[in-house]
Image (cartoon, rainbow, N blue to C red; front, side):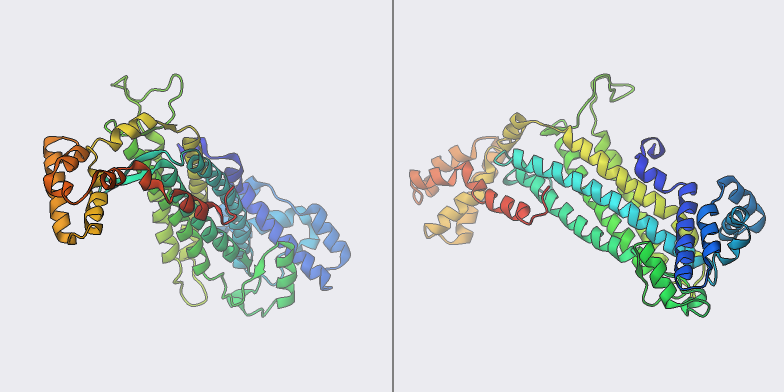
Length: 435
């Protein structure tokens, strides 16, 4: 399913062809640095620039014999370049190429994901602003609590995805480091100057203390940040799934002409996108655990991390890119149903006014616990009998003795619940990060 819907830009980034092309970028940057330092003569450098290339099938054929992908890659390139190829990979070890190329690929993947986050933030802002003032029931434990607005719901998710963006931008910057320091990272056959020159060409920073590999805490940060982002996607989708329940139906996923919801029941319209995204978030989180397990390698390196990263690097970045765009499309096509929000708001017979009445009694001089018992008694009777809480409060002799009509009118004013809505929205969108 994901293969069918993978977005082209991210999908192409993780093809075998592109991986080896980035390896070649790294090798050429190293050659350019050696040339600038006077090690590679101009004619050889020109030959490398003009001829360095490979054919993917040739690499795969060679790898069947070598059982080493970097050696197979180098052999395929050397066959194209000829004698000048003796300068390619000069003084380097495989991880110099692979880890530096990983930094290039993960940085490019990260920028694609950041773009997807920006699009999602834009849609959430539109929803928040469009539905500001749209009263709906706030729920805790799945039970009616007090009113909020659908705009505030969306603003809360916007604020969360701002945090995801900040965290992930930091993770992308943290992964944007390479190493060309040779076996065990001592520069025995290389020079720190060479590393700096080559990484400048690749727009990477220098890993200050590599072993034979880039320390994997950098990868762990990247993939755990993706996992947090996936958790945010799931939190929003769980909310939408609940709101689409038949008994609630305050929102509904778009349903295209000709779409079918069930092979057996023609009436079905299901929250399939939100459910799919909930499931995919579990995969992204499991990959984050694998990235954290990769942090502890033997001594200066082993390759226990390599097999893991061949899976999680493309999988997690492709999944998150897909998830962000599918969620964005879901939200753009979301049907918001105000009449059902109004219906559900009063579905608990106005019981959500209970705290307003409680506080009014306290302000009138009644002890809090005494006021609580007084209001709870009325509320429980209304819930049991399915009658109006407001009517019952106004008819209650004990409450009426303490609260006049004007004070009760104030306690039952719905607009009271949104008196600070603008303050919250301004806080969310005044940071300069709104789209």
